[in-house]
Length: 420
Image (cartoon, rainbow, N blue to C red; front, side):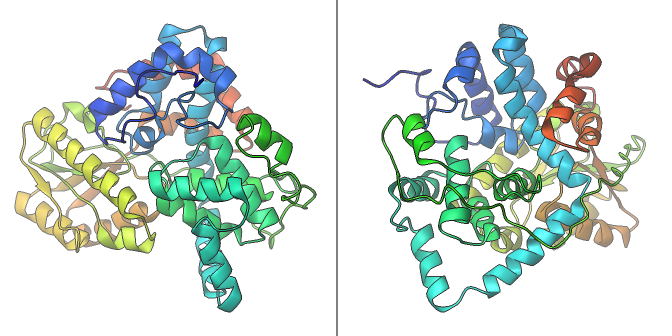
């Protein structure tokens, strides 16, 4: 007999709108306390977890909204596991923001590992990502990922461990495979989670998938006894400076200047930020095909982002009472520049984009706009400004930092007119 969860949560297709994300959050809240007991069970249709991550990843819903909703309905200790899971995403982003060299090192190693795929190694890699490794659980998860854009978090850990320590494939290629297909994939959480499994994030401390653990938490669906390397040593790498650097200063908006609002798929709830009270001449946003091609994103991931941007543009057009423009996907930079010039604005305002390809795109746009005397103002949410600086060590010190002196409670209660 299948245990029932909240109605339809895991079975319905992902619909990338803020309204659907908020509805999913509301349907999850009554069951949030049970998440602590059931969250490690990996049994389709995965109705024991929230499935909120694609909405949080694009900030169709906000971290503070998710945490506030469960804390309003349950005692803190009953939902501590869920709160921690949301905070992990913030921690990873803050950790990478303080150490951008780690992202650069990943991209460099990924290029080398891709260049090194040839002959037998290339054929074996193709078989593995097609779900034909010969390890039944791994192959099922590979197919589930490519078909649905989702994997249960526990399965992600097992998958990464098997990829690295049993199949002996480069971890960077596995991280890229995840980022290609996951609807909730982001550079920080994805890259650093793979480094953690490999034993590179906390040097010498790796995660080994064990057959007994898989059999237990898949409720006997899989039992790869004798198929896994459960004695593998952690990976090593050339010395990499992991000392946290300073966080760049947050930029304030000059409210006296004529402005345009620019949306990226990294943050799609401008009406739930301090931007909500500002006046703009127009709002624009759109997918960027070169960004998608550079990350080799799967069509489903691109389609999710496209639809999420369209939803955000419609909401912004209504909220700010201004016309919206969809930027040219084939030449996003030129289109964004032309849009700003057509509005005769002095500044283009956007919500801060974390480290990754979209950050690089905005830096390129900044240089283009500067030639016309137009400033690109990237506004960081108070959630990020308050919490990212605490990601100097491991997650547990960060968790304490987030909760210290009611800091987390305060951040979940800020109003949309504040820099949320």
